Amino acid sequence: MKILVVNLLRLGDVIAMAPAMKAIRLQNPGAEIHLMVNSNFSGAARLFEGLHRVHRFERDRIQAACVEADRPMFEAYDWLQRFVEETSDVGFDHIYNFTHNRLSGWLCGLLQAPKKTGLVLDGSGAVSFGSSWFRHLNQQVDFDDVQTFNHTDIFLGAVGGWELVSKVDFFDTLLLESKSGRAEAGARLSGLQISTQKIAFQISTSDPKKEWGEARFKSLAEKLLSAHPEARIFVTGAPNERERIEKFCKSCDVPAGLIQPAILTLPGVISFLEEMDLLITGDTSIKHLGSAGTARVIELIAGSADAFRTGSWKPGDYVVASREACAPCGHSEKCHRDVHACAIAISPAAVAALASSVLSAMQLRDVRAAMHAFATVQVYTVDRSEGPVQLVPLRSEHITDHALALTIERAARRLSLEKREGRFEKLDVGSEMLKVRQGLLRRFPDARPTELRHALADGETRLRHAEGMLNSLKIQLLRLKEAFQDPKRMLEMVSMVAAMRGRLQKNPWTRFIAEPLIQVIEDDRSAPFARFRKLSDAVQDLGIRLEIGLKLLRGLEIELENEAENEIDKEAKNTNSIETRIKNSTGEQA
Image (cartoon, rainbow, N blue to C red):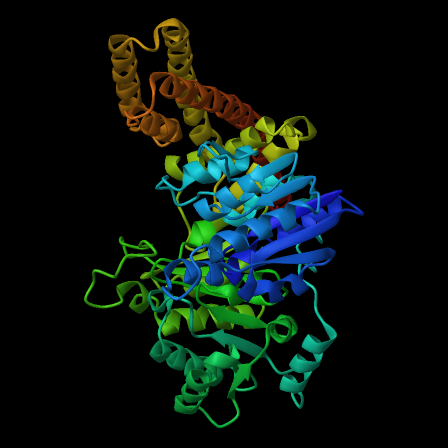
């Protein structure tokens, strides 16, 4: 079997698909796996185990040939035609497109293979995704929801990797170390004692808007070295960043040698990060390399960095973000503020407190206590107790309908996508319910079972009501099926859906149903049949999610009811024990 994986984005995006690459390899033993990347990132191919060949896409050459006046008119066309023919001649059985843009969609439409997963555009511009997960990725771009799926998890779902994720060691050894990389890292760290705490800083990103700022990194270095004088800080970077990094290290007000440049090649930085106790970075490729390795990561979110879609994804990592309402902003937008507010709000003192907690190997409850004083930032820990990444706030939360509904809905959404992929039968709803219970324990560690059970019972009532509304909508769709081209009937349906959406949006438990309906009723440019089909698909999908959500809720309520009864029995036994001791003590005194 021959498999082609396509990723025509930046290095960080290529690294983010490391779990999916491992899943493909484990599920297809003996398969010939190829990787297509932009030519300037072809070095990343050495990081994945089991790759047979790398196909270099000359994106810069094509762009230059299209705009430079002195280039042959058909240079780009001729190169692309030859590239497509040569790649197709390999005879691939399956193509995965992990690049969700039009360029890769058209390219994968031209390449020949009997099975394609990911965005594909055919000659007429028709779109196919080959996976419910990639279709969901296309939809969730418009969702204004803080707990959308991380792209790494969408890639995992698209390749059917959730069964593998449950294995304890799945996130170990995602990337390959090389002999030259180990030698490079060893030379850079030679002379350090084993007990020395090693901290890596990545001060630059591909977009200045996403940077925390050198002044704040300097302040952080001073605070950390004051609290941990035995530590050493290494500022990582590529050879083209040498001048900036050396200047930064010299400008820090710390004793010589405590903070040093670490200019490394890509294989070198892989091995180097494996030796680090902590990596503090912005949203850049080093963040993804850290998430794919063993070093604990603290990611600082600023500008257009999106903690929930593209943030750190290794269990136990931390994400620090400001509470600014405008974050995250769009990638192509300029900051409309007079100051870089989202970066300024993340104080060096807060990051230093978190970093010290990690270096001191504190328990999570102690980290929560240490961060309680820093109200201007939101600190999350990366949790995978439910499978997909969930960013759990460190600051203690009160139980809210929004938080509970979001937890249940995310689990139901993942299971409904798996059901559409034909993999739901392999999942035990009971075990999935226990995963959700574990997630609730992480998010609300102080909540009592009785309190949670009552809140979930209210949620079940809300979802039951929504289920009735959705069933009514299904009946109306059946009546519309034979008359969807009648503008009057379609307008009546849109008015009905709009009214329903208004009611559903008012409650956190049913808000997720309103989101897909918004997209359908606002689409007034599609042909009547396409509009009817979209609405039918949306209602079918929502029905599945509701059904699964209600099953999870009922299972959780039973589990919590048992826990509450055990808690009451335990309290009764303790009360009886105390009363017995009092009686015995009274008898002895008498």
